[in-house]
Image (tube, rainbow, N blue to C red; front, side, top):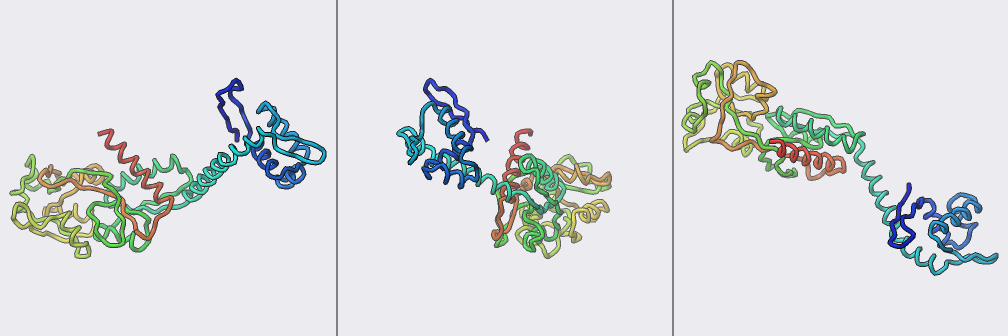
Length: 314
């Protein structure tokens, strides 16, 4: 490693090898060439040559040498006092960086709910590997019936899922992605000819329902119980998104989905209508409050960068 020091005097820029600094600091502490050589596991002659080379770079003697003693000159003492904290800070910074790099080399399991979340996690993984090329990320699709089970069981470290999340023992990050809701209807249905869906239309439709294992608050957020004061009818119960789309295609019910479903799981027998009367879906990273690793934090930072890039391209 070469450390470059820029001075304000006539000496200009001085290029110094970090090993020379280490030799200088060690000799300044030991004040003995033999002991310095032992500490650094080099020869006494090598120490002497390194010090002479260092003094030439500085432009003045740093040590007074006699046959009986070695002592710092006034300039040497000044340089020692200046270098000790600075060199220590550099060493500490490099040590911390190496430790962080070691902690971010490993495996990470990330869950995702649905194709939109999967696309985001894939993009985040790509961004993560730019800075941490040795990490391995395994993507696992979460169960629509219980998207947080992987976090609770420890099968995944993080899950990128729709909000809200109110379970105890879980940490929810900021919203990283918003997507508009669409209404999936059978292409055979008269609804397929509509240009937009109003609350009055919604009130008369049977909606695909989620299994009872889904938390009530999450079920209510994804499928409100009423619209405009009119209760929403519940249709067949499903556990996965493909199951829901099959029910919709058969004309047995309708379903609200995000735009990524059209891109990734679009079917010719289903029409997707704008649903402006309901709020957009929001996605965030969720993890256990009992688990937090440097690699998880690195993935979260990469997800934030991915979210920012997506917003800038819209």
